[in-house]
Length: 120
Image 1 (cartoon, rainbow, N blue to C red):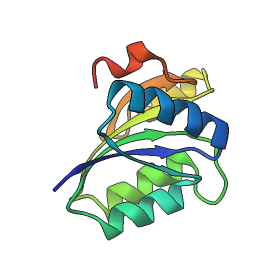
Image 2: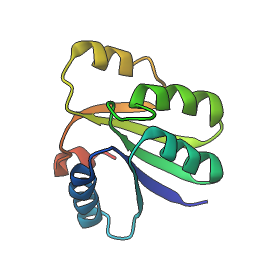
Image 3: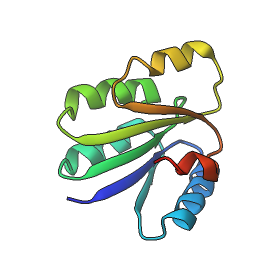
Image 4: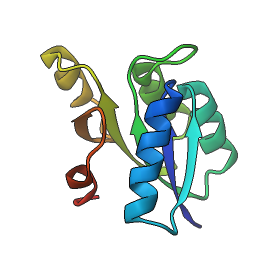
């Protein structure tokens, strides 16, 4: 079993920035980026033995963050994962919705900062 960090965001520039920040702090981390929730879900389902630390955007094509959270709870409930929403949304309704998902551990505003990684 290994731990993988997944960046699930449709913006390649944000994925690049976040990957660089994470690699700076955790140079040996296994890090993968996916452009939508469906691709991230497929990877998790194909590798259920891994532990996942997921940085999830909410607004994406094909499968958005909310759909991903619902699907992962149904289709990969046995997988050890921790989700941190990373979004540009400061809508209080989104923050309240995030609290309804047991896998969500934090709600962060883009872009990630060094301080966001300290407690992970």
